[in-house]
Length: 157
Image (cartoon, rainbow, N blue to C red; front, top):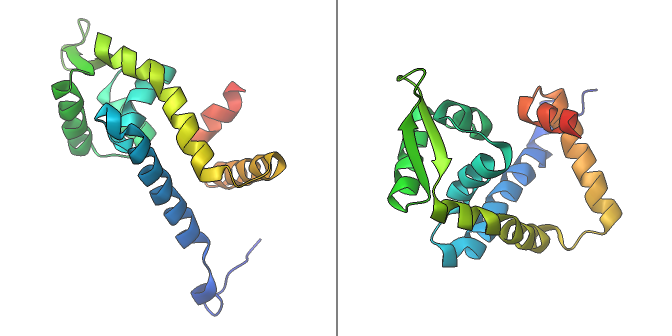
């Protein structure tokens, strides 16, 4: 179904609202992470490694939509903070594996609490049924757009 035309596109705000929601979410997350010395971007890497068992930079790039250079810099910073360690895969020395350090695991154990607080700050204004509707609508839009991560998450449920 087509909702937009060149004539009404100038009054279309959906793209702006989706982009602003993502920016505000990260800003709120950053404020909740400040005491832990990590950013929202670093949070995403740590939570994906911890919760989804992702252990290669290439797979992290796919999850986060980052290029390999950006991911390398991100992993460098997390390694400097002693939150992750990188090692060569014994079966294929060309491949790098990522794992949480002891300190990284301690922080990863706190991330669901920190994330929940931040998301409550963002969407706490919504009633439970409104949040469920928003989630369903965003899932439908992302699945229709071919988002493979959303498809994986939906199939896991």
